[in-house]
Length: 283
Image 1 (cartoon, rainbow, N blue to C red):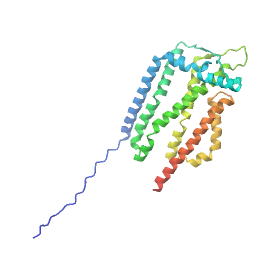
Image 2 (tube, rainbow, N blue to C red; image 1 turned 90 degrees about the vertical axis):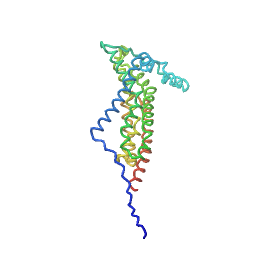
Image 3 (cartoon, rainbow, N blue to C red; image 1 turned 180 degrees about the vertical axis):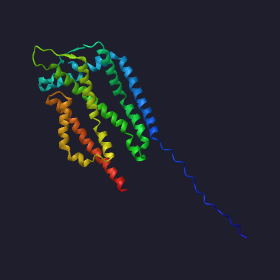
Image 4 (cartoon, one colour; image 1 turned 60 degrees about the vertical axis):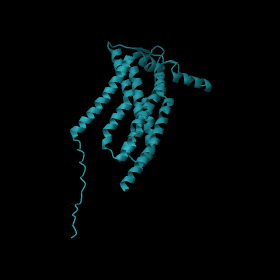
């Protein structure tokens, strides 16, 4: 008699699903990333604070002097082209402080700004670490360059502003007179705010391709929309250039060219993201 062997179908046990994080868990995780980012900024700000003479004499105050690298190169170019106006010379301004704690507070402020600029790649990395768990595997692959791209674009904007726009701005306003009887005695806070605002604003504007990437990813912006509004963007770029530069055509052109190139780059990035998104929806 044949022995009947009963076999049971073995059903593999499903792996336990990972517990989804609650709203408060997300807030706690975000708090950790913010804390580490602030810690990095503060540590680097302390380093900048302890290197006062380098930060102020070599970096902040240098663009107003005729021996600053940009001013020297422009002067050499002017001599070569026989255009004397390119030799900017010194920005004839006397910086003064009229507040008891003015210089100390300025020192604190600039140290924090320096810490933020240097720590930005790490801050972006912490931000990326916070959002990456919510991304799909393919999205994670494409987002790996976020930190590098964001850091490079921001620092490129900062260097462009510092070496090109800041010397031109200081020279224009430092040498502008309504009368020979009026000397430019500039408040320290006014000088610092001009340097910092021009530098940081251009650095942030250079993040345009990153912004367009995310707006296209969530469906708010399309490459067709960007192409259609090229002329509008051209006007916006001119207005923005007029705001963040001294009121002369040469400086506005210098700012407008890289911004327009960034806009064209953003269109290509948007098209790539849009095409990929359409393929995923069709599939």
